Image 1 (cartoon, rainbow, N blue to C red):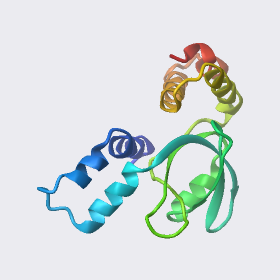
Image 2: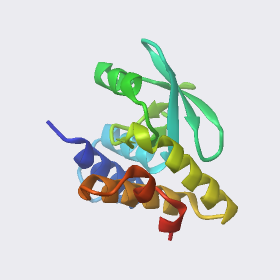
Image 3: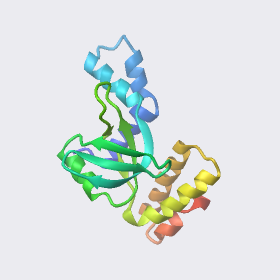
Length: 167
């Protein structure tokens, strides 16, 4: 079973670092049309930080904590529905829009911040907005803050997630 960190790595490598675009452009490789179509979707994915507001059997309503935009996303499968249903903290995720129909999906590499980090992370987002920081840089900073919290046994959540840690 692929762990969440591995999914997040592949999500970032394909969508964030441009490998999906390379798959689309490299005609010398024997990819099928399905692979190219999927790679194009990932290349257009939108990364942001979301709060999961409502979840039902088919979809979930996400609120973008950075911009305030609300999105209705369709579950890829039952496991994703359960993960969204249990989400208590903010979620760093990429939203993908297929080339047919009005549906949106969350890519499998979504990263869930701890529930207790919600308020401190919202304070960090407010400070980042005041400084006009780039969305990607802020999301990466939040991931570094989570790493500090997870790997340091004596660090409290409010110390790990703080505006002073923004770069």
